[in-house]
Structures are given as C-alpha cells and as structure tokens.
Image (cartoon, rainbow, N blue to C red; front, side, top):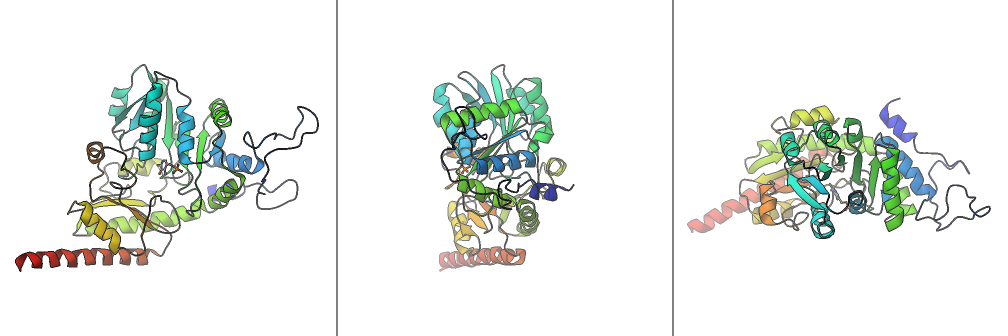
Length: 393
Ligand SMILES: *Cc1c(COP(=O)(O)O)cnc(C)c1O
C-alpha cells in the first residue's frame, strides 16, 4: 500500500460508535469496574484515548514503535534531555533551533549536562567531538534557518559505534519527506506546531522512538512531569496530519520555484535551499529525503538589518511572524526574532547574517508568491536609487 493511503487509514474509526473522526475525549478521569480493573485508561495525564490515537498514528508515520504527544515542541525536546544525567554530554548541530539552545544552556547546564556545538554537515566533526561522556547526538536536518543538511545515516553509525543516542529534530522535513528512524536514528522529535499541524492553529510536540523501551522511558518522564497535549489539540493535530502529504507536495513545489527565482535576483547575495544544485549537501538531501521542504532563506547583497526590514515591509502576501509550516506564507528575520537569544558572534558564525530572511512558503498560488517577492525587491531598488539621488543633491 502506498504511504498516503496507509496514513489516512491509520486514523481509526471509533470502535464504540463508528464515528469516522476520532472523538474528543474531554475527560479527566475514567470510571473503573473494580479497583485495578479499567479499560486501559485511568487518569488523563497518563493516557487519553484521543491522544493515544494521535500517538499511534505518528508512531506509524515515522516508522517508530512509540509516539508521545506533548504540549509543545520544546516540551518534547525537554523529555528527551531527561534521559540523560548529570555529567553527560550532548553533541548538537551548531545552528540549532534557538529555543533548544536556550533549554540546553540556561536550564540543563546548571544540572551538569554540557553541550558541544559542531558543524554536523561534516561527519568528521561529529566523530572528533565524541568523548566517553557523550550520551546524545542532536541534529536538525534541514536546520533552521540556513537549511544545512547533515547525513543522518553516517551520524547514526557514529552514535551506534559509541553507544550514544541519535535524536533528529525532524520538524523542517516532516515525515512526509524524511524518516530518520529508518536511517538509523533512535529518536525523532517534532514541533508539531509546524508542518504536522499545518494550519498555524496549535502548539504541540512529539517524540517518536525506535524501540519500545525508549518510548516507555519518555512516557514515564511525561507522566512524571506532566507536559501532555490536550484532547482537543490532539484532535486538531490528527486533522492536520490527514492532509500532510498533499500539503507538503505543494510547499516543496512552490519553494523550489521561489528558491530558483531568488538565485537569479541581482539584489540577493545567497540562497539557502537544499533543492538547489548549488547547495553544498544537495546530494545528501536528495538521498535521504523525498523532497526539499517549504523553507527558503536568503540574504541580501546589502547585508543590513535595515535592508531586510524594508524587504519584509514591502512583501504583502508573506506575513511577518515567527513559526512556519502553515497554510499562509510567512516571512521572518532570524537575527532579531527566532535567533535573538543566540549571541551575535555565534549566530553570524553559523551563517545567520544580519540581512538573512527566512520564508515559510505557504499554499497560495506560486505565481502570486513570486509576484509578491518581485514587487518587494522592486520597491527596495527604487528606494535605494532615491537614496543615491539624495546624496548627489
Ligand atoms: C518551533 C521549533 C521548535 C519548538 O517547538 P514549539 O512547538 O514552538 O515548542 C523546535 N525545533 C524546531 C526546528 C522548531 O522549528
């Protein structure tokens, strides 16, 4: 059976009533037949039928054993770090999501967990960074926002050889394009807020594990600390996932067109998109994923915050907002938004320059999106010329 068919039919029909949409079990507790005898549910922090349906769907979607649904992507990341103990080390991708960086540096550091940030696009850097204390390797691929690509299979081999876990934050690719567990990773996390939800209407996170044992550990930490996804948000997320493959196809197609257009534009310095042949790890992206995703970043020849702000202001269909992966196209300025918690020096070294602009290409018609970008550049040019004239006068 093909994947989309399998996904759609992994969404269960309610065994009690035949409801074709998974019911929202808005309840905190479950009546028990006798002490210790229940129908698999006792208290809704531990388990809830709507959340359980979602967790089964995502476990299958990522080719994993166990799925666990959290109240946010960061809660999911937090649960994975809880597998470690004081003295353990993490090796993480250098342009890691800003919130994960903050969690590592401002929360877990004080509990004695340390993180080495390396450029994981070169497997050798990962190999060289491993110490006897390394317990977890953490990658995102593609990364946010410079769309760096790391070789999941090669890094998984290093993890295995050194008896540490490989966790892949698969938010940017989504399981419609890339399945890290099938490439050797142990854990996948998602900010389901993005492509899995897909409609910019909820905050959610997921952990999916390759083994039952790891999944049970994550479940234990979730129940012990309580960062669950609500029944309604679980339902909303199932509803989003139903159309994931279809949406992703369109995101990829439009993003490719936009990236190619940007690459030829005279005001653009550099375009970051794994679907471009000029991307340094295009061949790896092509091998390990079915497509290149809906995020395109670029910077300007005039590499200033002011020039970026002007472009963003000129764009009309690309709405200025944090987040990504929804129906409506968004634009963001990482240096002052998602990456503001990362020190400037570290940020620029990782490629997040002052004029870097990130586009989350939505589901509008591609020709309208191209037209919007084009007019935003035209206005930028007119203003640049006006300023020149002012100098001459
Ligand atoms: C948004 C995001 C997160 C955090 O997820 P929240 O749902 O906002 O908590 C983690 N990783 C990546 C790559 C993200 O884009």
